[in-house]
Image (tube, rainbow, N blue to C red; front, side, top):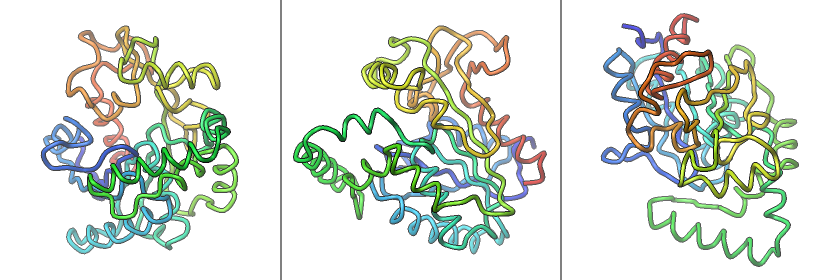
Length: 273
């Protein structure tokens, strides 16, 4: 089957959500991949945990998955900040030998100038926002939320330091891709952050710019084949439906995000992963 890869798939979520059986972070994507032969597992790390703490948790998850499946390695597909958690785990926790590939979806590898600007607000306000986030996500299941640390790690300077200290591991295939919204009204949930990031940094998916998302083998920028474009939420199928009715007519266009992931996994299979 087209998605029956040599190694299992580990899906790692980003900020703001958790992996739940009844309300899957990834929408229809896992079901479609499994119907095409994929073996899928989930990260289950904290939503607002620091990069290092989440990486240590993911290390344990990989050990569990490898023991359960008997596989030698695993393919990781990570959305948003989840990609940073995985890069830290691979580089600093000696798990490169058990990771075949890391695919990052709109991960802010180079930080955000918008976050730079927001953290220029009075520190008391930033700490209050972080405290409120920690309380909320603690109620939702986070064990070690640390929003203040997370906010600062996503600055351009924070990511510059991170990248200097976190080199790619030899033997691991790294690739990345980015998405953009076509208009502010492409996604009513993301219109305001899209406006804010657009004024500060340019085209984006509502949170992350293509320039920040590029890492390893860069697959480029994808958008919808219809009028909406693809938002940060669309990337994980939040709405559980097609992005556009018609077929894709140009390279880099997507009409159904599930098909994008099937093609992504099929390419991993073709590479021998």
